[in-house]
Image 1 (cartoon, rainbow, N blue to C red):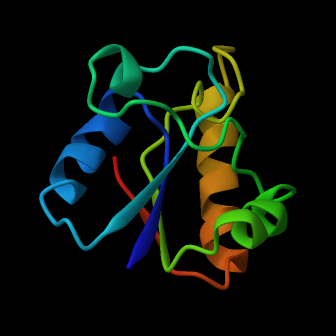
Image 2: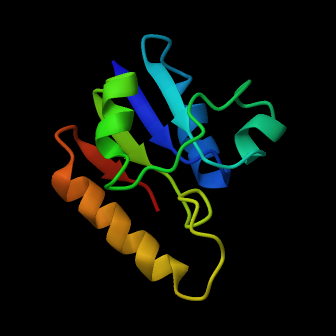
Length: 110
């Protein structure tokens, strides 16, 4: 099984650590930031895709890595939205739309 983990911050790192327990899972990590918690803490060696997962980039990313499942373990910073006051509302809307339009199952981790 191939799983795309969107977000390599603290939340995504916890997800990745659990998935690493099953050697038959191929993990693809997506995060737009240059430095991530998961890499800094040596949970993973590198981020596989330095992209933001949005409704506009979904098809491109699905075609690039062909995952069986997407786990949204992202914060507004992981989506490349910055840290503006209402970014959490925009982030929530983007995650809901991704889940609705994705042909691949999407699970959101809070």
